[in-house]
Amino acid sequence: MFRRREQRSLRERVVAARRRQQERFAGKRNVTCNARMGTRDLKAFCALDEATLELLKMAMAELKLSARAYDRILKVARTIADLAGSDRLTSDHLSEAIQYRSLDRQLWA
Image 1: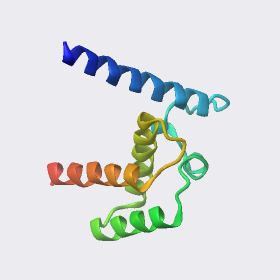
Image 2: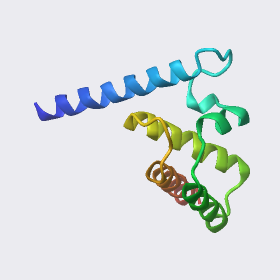
Image 3: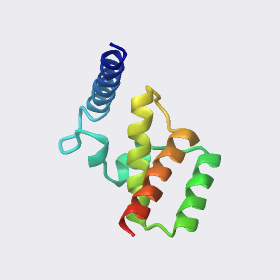
Image 4: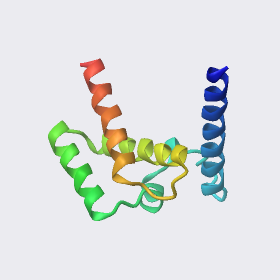
């Protein structure tokens, strides 16, 4: 019984996040979700405050990540924020995205 409610809640969060993305990119031809964002979209929709930007810079240096990884982390963080119903990226969203990236590197190393 509890599991069904949990699944329904998760499904509702995912549907709401997808709806947010569709609304965000409504006027864009080739962008339908966060994963398809280009550089301009990242700057527009993934703005970071100074402390969060410093966190990302530190992670980039310590994990020796590429510019491509930087973009991917921002896209994942934007998706995490969408799932949380947040309009802006926070250090919590970014930290979670960085964790996934470092976990991914550990699995493929």
